[in-house]
Image (cartoon, rainbow, N blue to C red):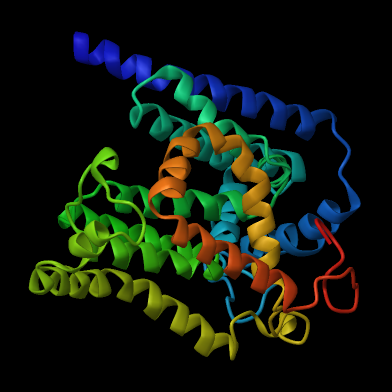
Length: 331
């Protein structure tokens, strides 16, 4: 009974946060106006892809369709449309369940790590993000992909390399890449988790780039190499899946987007670091002790980080420019 009561207490704050998110998103679905940018994104791309797949069901054509992402979310919603119809509002309400699951799972994970109910508030900045809320209220694939990212990272955070890590992580990563190909980056933390193996607890982890950390990372090389090889096997299905889409599309996105979405932007690192700095303020109370310890014991690491941050901000052009793709957000 005590264990059941503790489990209930761990889930209760997570359910509360997820319920608040659901109410906010549902209010938008029933009463909110759709901003022009979201209207174009939803109606001209994702809703069109969902309805096209529903019409082609059960043999949808995945060679070229109205989304620059892999089709996992759109196929799921096309299947759901067979139950709720292809009307915009019913589909938005059905899609909201994905976002509620994401917020619920993230909040619960936050609770069970520190072991206190108030830790659910650690998920609040994420739940309050306009991008997360928008993907919950409209037909956008972002939150379905973030749910996959969270699933992969949860396998990494377990701190154990076993059958659950290899099989579950492989399935989660493959489903994620099937939903949004750009999130293949989560293969990197999977491989890192495999290399680290059954690591120490958070309180026992050494400081960044300290001698103790190098010792922890480089001891027992044979065991680490064996685990890394198993990790490579686990990420292979996702790599094979993406390779199949690239072969079918003739590129990293469906053909109709290849003349629009291409190339890179050297200002991206500066943009990402700026966003991390802004959102990191919400997590400052959790990071302060660790940063202060590093300031006292490893100032050279912070100095290197400062130099690198200045370099990525100063070297590329970061001024406002519509032609160069720097015209929303922080630009």
